Amino acid sequence: MTRVIVSSPYVAPGNSLKRLMIQVIVALLPGTIAYAWFFGPGVIVNVALAIIFALAFEAAILRLRAKPVLPHLTDFSAVVAAWLFALCLPMHAPWWLVAVGMGFAMVAGKHLYGGLGFNPFNPAMVGYVVLLISFPREMTTWYLPAAVSGQTLSLAESVAYSFGSVDIGQWDALSSATPLDQVKTGIGQNIPIDEIRQAPLFGHYGGTGWEWIALWWFVGGVYLLITKTIRWHIPLSLLTAVMSMALLFYLIDPAIYASPLFHLLSGAVVIGAFFIATDPVSAATTDLGRIYYGLMIGSLIYVIRVWGGYPDGIAFAVLLANMCVPLIDYYTQPRVYGEK
Amino acid sequence: MTDSSEITKSGLWRNNVALVQLLGLCPLLAVTSTVVNGIGLGIATLITLVLSNTIVSLIRDFVRNEVRLPVFVLIIASLVTMIELAMKALFYDLYLVLGIFIPLIVTNCAIIGRAEGFASRNPVGPAALDGLMMGTGFLAVLALLGGLREIIGFGTLFANAELMFGAGAQALTITLNPDYGGFLLAVLPPGAFFGLAILIVAKNWLDLRPAEKPQPVDALPEGL
Image (cartoon, rainbow over all chains, first blue to last red; front, side, top):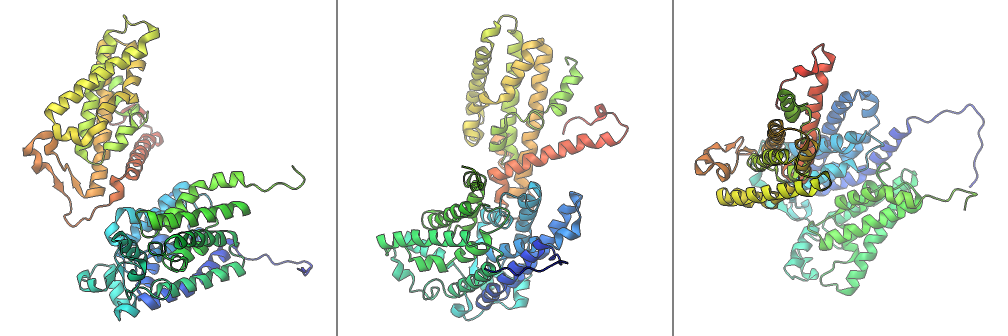
């Protein structure tokens, strides 16, 4: 690699944190658009609501802590956390669900630990797990993709749904389990996987719609890698761990263990690998540590999916790995040049 | 320190077992999912504290210093066993709800702490008063934390009051909003930690506030 030497004067690049966050938002766009394409504009409503609540809670707690409000709000870190959080929610969620989640994410997950840069846990995942544990009914009401049900809620209907001004019952026919949920339930009833996957909910490799969305998250992830917003260690080791565990058990018994491709393309593995696990604050900071961190999350995702109580396990896996980060970092410090 | 108003203030507020000394947190965090559970365990702890402080104070001149701790533990364990049997006989349903936490009162650091730190050095009167006030302070925090978690977690107040006060108390149960779906986190262990932390913040805030005014700290309102 040749480096062009330029003589002074130099122009300092802008706020680097802000640029980093804008890169992440750009990378999130294709996947979000694909998500809305398959499941309707409810996703956009969720993202918008989450951003509004995140900024409001962030502004309130910054005032309480007597910190400058505007510079922190415009670094877009709260926007990215809100966006990722909203993508984890079911497509249609009541507004108070988003508010409670963002409140815990911003206040308890981020600012009670000292704000951006000091939080040991990924704030978006803290908010999501609080909701998953507290509101199991709202958090498991998922909807069918348009390709299966033939219709999705319009933008106006999605907004009305979020603010509870319509009777939710009329859309009961559109609600459905996620593909991962369906597989888990089916295996519990001793139905072989091939038979479970005959349902229209399932596509070629993963779930209908879900597999394409995963592809667009992958495209966004590659963009992040090219722009050097994230490094390759965490996504690669995470995906490797999920795929190799899935392959091992798939080879042992393909009737009860889904294929590696199904695990890769359903749920939140791809977005988790590129966008959630790579949070620069709560992830491991050494190169070797990042590989261990990714391997740990990947294996935990598979363990939770197959033997755990929840159909998907990104959030729990990331939070558990967050807890191990100080230990991982301590044991993986690179050798200083010239020392033994 | 033996002045009775000092003992009262110290037990209820300034040295509150739960909010300042942070003792007995295991039962405090585990059983306070409702007001009734909190009050039930609070009263059992209060009775243990008063009796153990009284007895320890009575025998303080006859027990050799070297063996005092085993003797205190024996006294407290006997008292807790008596209270457990009494609750089994009188409030069987509440006894079932509180379960292991009634025998575990024996391990509550607040009780051995008061026996060692206060009752073994003071005459019977102040010792019994200290037990009463420390116990009341603990009871108040248990009830308050139970109420906080019950309102947020279930949207009710005084649910299952009949367990403690008989069938007539069923009317005591207040449902604040019948449409409220509940917020499970408040009932689960994290809710206990968050709730206790909020109460400690509130107490510290109340304590620090008069420091800005010319008012002396002693003029604080008593109780919680």
